[in-house]
Length: 199
Ligand code: GRF
Image 1 (cartoon, helix red, strand yellow):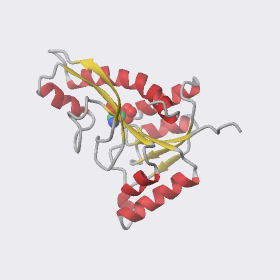
Image 2: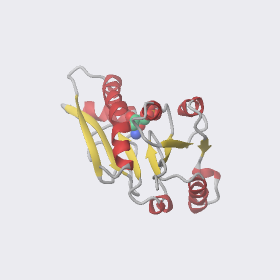
Image 3: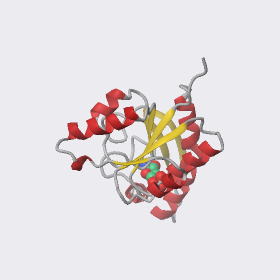
Image 4: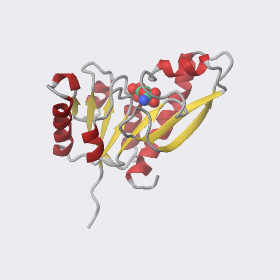
């Protein structure tokens, strides 16, 4: 029997340029999966319009809209199950993933982080703050990390790291752009291997 196409939910909070890279890879059949759902923690995330343009259903999910964290996790899990989601790819999602979701998707959730973890990860280390910290510490290199997701921020097993140089006259914005270019190239490749159990 032919194996059905895996279904991926992409979780975002912001611009969604990595989401767009995944959409482009799917269109070119380099990502052999269905992008079945985009979950956003913000109602105004720019990434939502990218999802809509690509015809991907969206789901706005904000923990504080529910009476408890457990109740919120239950609603999100029901949605993921209803849509028969097999894997979750975090792409700029700023919230912690609830333990209930992690146990329902063991080793099936990945994240991309714009630094060489374990350095420059954890609470508060997101967006331009990461690159500001890297430059302030006079690092000679930074990069990206793609890793499994567990109950701590930026913590699970590392699947792939790509290094990027940091220049003496760098600005956080320039470094961010240099890293994002690599993110857009590598996230679809790693995700495609990940869903096939090859990474
Ligand atoms: C990326 O740099 C990613 O590494 C981090 O958040 C950023 C998201 O950017 N987790 P975008 O929303 O994909 O443009």
